[in-house]
Image (cartoon, rainbow, N blue to C red; front, side, top):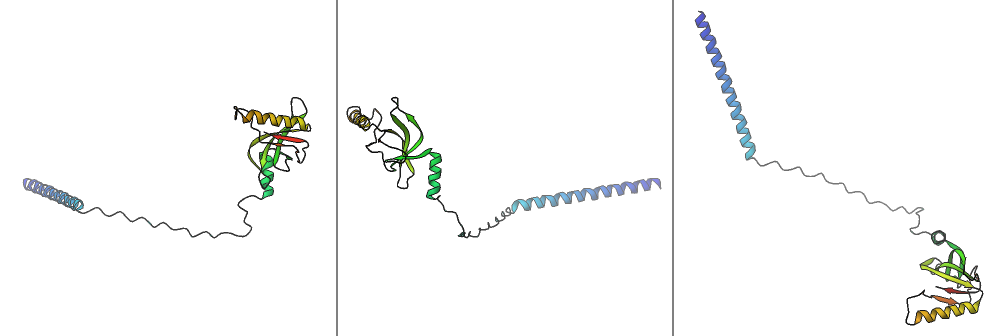
Length: 180
């Protein structure tokens, strides 16, 4: 009886092992089949990108809108700061003087930096030098000397004379002016 029970137990164990082996084989076959069918199928298409929302047009605000360019008064105030304008001019506003006055070596002339004024009275162009003197004859002679030196063989080698003004006719300036 013991032998029969041991044999029955052995047969049960063998049957359970066979069933487990059969189940493993079936699972492996199913996995292989699934893998083969996945390889045969084309990859799913990528999802379409979500549409980008278009912003609504912005309405222009017309109430109390600041002007795009500053007013002439504001431009003049800023030019006075940027170019160190001192409020003086020569040539009836044609040239705007800037900075502090320097004395010539003789002490008889005043020398200023200056800028040519545009039609609105704002500085434009490169910085110039203006020499003012009450000695009309001396400044006129200096102007002729600049004409001689810069007009001949040595043109462009010296200071360029822009203009001689026999009458400075300016705010805060008297006498004649030589613009270089």
